[in-house]
Length: 571
Image 1 (spheres, helix red, strand yellow):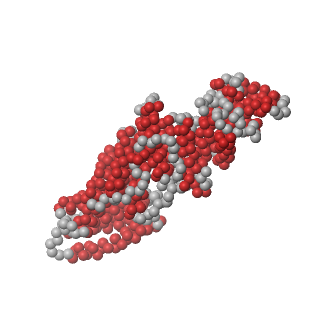
Image 2 (cartoon, helix red, strand yellow):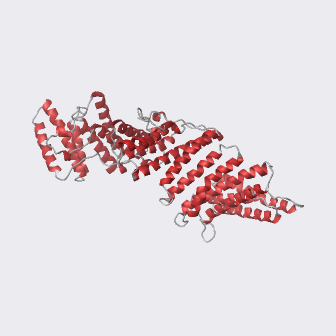
Image 3 (spheres, helix red, strand yellow):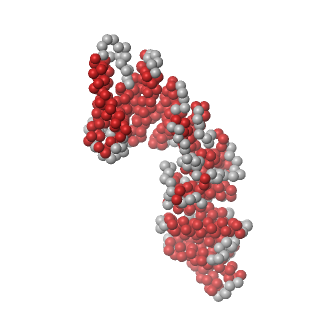
């Protein structure tokens, strides 16, 4: 088991997406209100018989039957009567009745199932995580001991209670594996609740592995595939790319090979199509994370932590994966490899978009478009040719600009703000690429280059303006207080000043107007921070730069006014 202290990690991925009690029903059990009387009668009869004996094989057999009866009654009290106190007492009675003989074939199911139910009630009804974990540990120990000492199948309840109608009992083609799986499912929920996410991750893998090995799926086989893909989202946050890719490949293999051949009724169902899209999104997230980390390693010379040793063996053995090698599990360090990875990400994003269309869910579709833009931006970082970098940026914003024109601002204002800010940022970066090449590197400044620089600057300002103005109250910025949105709003003003300043014009008065506009942008930021000093603590570096630029404008204006003679361009 993973070390508890080191496993209290907070994930950006919401772990409730993976196996949890909220989406998991109780262990299958068929009963009705009439079962209570017959089971209680059986319980009292067995108690009388046990009390009349003084040991021996017959008492041992009767105790096994009594334990099974106690478990059945516990389920009836909990599910039919809603009496958790009576249910817990019966589950404890089942366990105590066979104390010292828990790993016997006649007793193992009653013991594990009773511990499972005690863990379930403690977690879901009482929110007592520590007690639930204690019961899970006992169920786990009982299973492990039985596995070591016994071979073959555990005695099913219908053999212990032959006079009880089958509809009153647990039904499963492999009751022991079923009981074990529910132990693991409940353990996942408990570990998640107490913040031990590595352990939750490990036990989720164990549930998938056990289901796969026994061809026994407590939920739909489609849920198995999706759960495997969702685990990958958690593994990549631990930099466990080999294990993450393995789980994604297992999910795809299940969807593309196993379900079409073995679960024909599920193939091409609406749920199948939805889960296929969800798994494609998981592949895209995997690739994006790998591409981002590759960039930081290459350009910031960062070395990322290795994955925890406890996750290194989270693999499905004896399961042939047909597409595991289609994506790398290693960091990329050149453009060719980065492009191959980016192409795979874009392929999976397109597959996801084909299901989650704009008409179906504008919010989710916008996230996919933002991811598409991020892929092209990351890929451009591996490109040395400035012109090709610019083309990658252009490809990245095609969907975003179309989306910006389609969204209803009133009902989707937060999505629009994200898109406007991102479009402003991308156009600003495109302007910087052109400006760096043609102005600072003193390449020939052609009319086409000037037109592009000015176009990118104007486009960036347009989108930053839309972002800023969406917050206006009576045509001015409101008092944001401690709202975290204040920083991007003020940073947008600085971006607009910088983009305005880089416009290339051939008239002095136009350049003077530009400088005065820049001063207004910078002054807005400074005035806001003077009014609310706490804002400056959010962005100390940006404010220092803003003040320096604001102080430099008067001297630049004077210098520009003093300039005489014909000047081809003012930059």
